Length: 188
Image 1 (cartoon, rainbow, N blue to C red):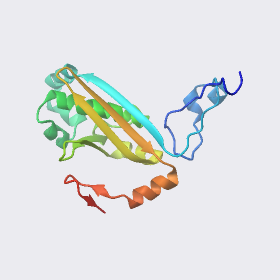
Image 2: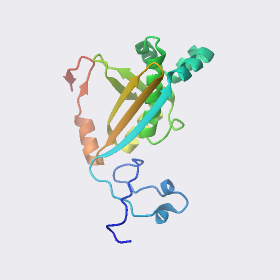
Image 3: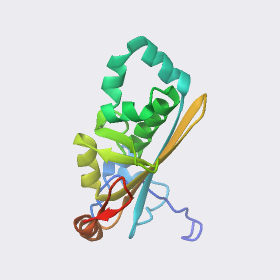
């Protein structure tokens, strides 16, 4: 097979921008067992996570475990902003699943409450990472994280997008970044 016929093989965002690709990612044969060579990542890298959940599943868990479930999975602010609506709690649950996928850890690698989904005054959801989730984002050199969710009567769906720029660019942007507060004003 000539080079033009070889497929491009892309890999998920699982490492720092300038670090070599981990061999474990490709199984026991490592990169040698791949059907084609890896396409090198350049500039900005993106990781995406998506999740969908039945609202009734969250309702049943809440009915069975009540406050214990809420305290294990959601922060006080998340519960307050959900205003007692199961579809909103399910949406946040789906966002947390999507965030863990974008971080490349799955839910076993980070705690539920380490991923906080809060709404800005505009209603737009925003992400706050704590503990292991924050350390994972810092390790990957993420300099942006965005989420979106949609709630229906029966289902909630969410998507999370993490952005990694080269380590030099990410460090510069993180040190020079301003924070948008709930009022929408920019502050240094």
